[in-house]
Length: 473
Image (cartoon, rainbow, N blue to C red):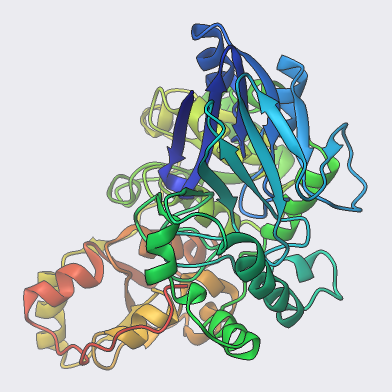
């Protein structure tokens, strides 16, 4: 029997490939399904099932494409939602055979009502692993406030109560030696304080996970919802795509990975009103970019910030990328439901610059340069665009907090006529912030490269006393 965790760092997401005696199953696959198919073909195995732990909010699953390409059966836990595709709606305790192994569906409502875990019995008939989806993470459990964005009467308190019961009645009685394989790790917005570890024994989680300690349902609910911030705006839209269906990834790639000369790129931008998304590194972007572009670097938490910054999944997008990475950008956009990329700048920004078209720039300075400016002027407006929890934990004294997460509210704190020196933790989010506001006519924002890390290490700024954050959201 083979168990393989396929972890995708930018989404902090774990998919799983399970194989026994020529048959395979995939749990919570990503949108691009060819790697799963290729893996099974290399091993002369047939993918029999696609198991979904729940209707995902933070990414679009590859269940539909994978089933269509392989003939596999899609399996969900108990749900009354009307699906836009063929699937088997499993029952609590139902078993599925994969070669000489078997998987038992355990219905664990709480994160969502259909949430289910899959208990794997090895070829000797012994329970070996449990795939917990967003029910149980390493060090945390799934947040209970997402389903209400789709079904209004499912309040976070009701769902927290369901999760309390699911954990104590369905999960905790299982053997301590089980390996827990969750759907997410640190960096996901589906929980508050997940570990960087991507698996653990259930026994250790019973000892160390706060949510599995002895407490009343009321105490559990309070702990679970304390510190929750509003989820990214794209989450409910991803849920509906996972329920109702979506375009084939092949069609999305064909539409988005279309090369456009600088002249064609400019014409399409003018004709369609498409958003220009520049995915280069922040310090490459700052030196020159197509006017009105926004910068979300492909090598950061790309999908998460695209989802947070672009509210409409059907927004047409034109891509500026490092040469050779254009298809990767289209794929990673599709992972979170942005299926309407309509082409990319062939030859990248260099081709645009060589064509003598207009370019724009954002000034970027070091922490040392900021210190010199502050010393000369006496005071400067420093804007910290990290999350409020990060800011409250530690920040430059007298700096304002304007979280990137809520940019439409944050921009109200800025006077267009004043100069602001903008920083985040390391330089990624500040350029996202600066580029978006630049496109909206805010011309007096200066980026501080290296972010709070470099500012603090410079020793030239007074920093507030460190306070341990109550939440990492």
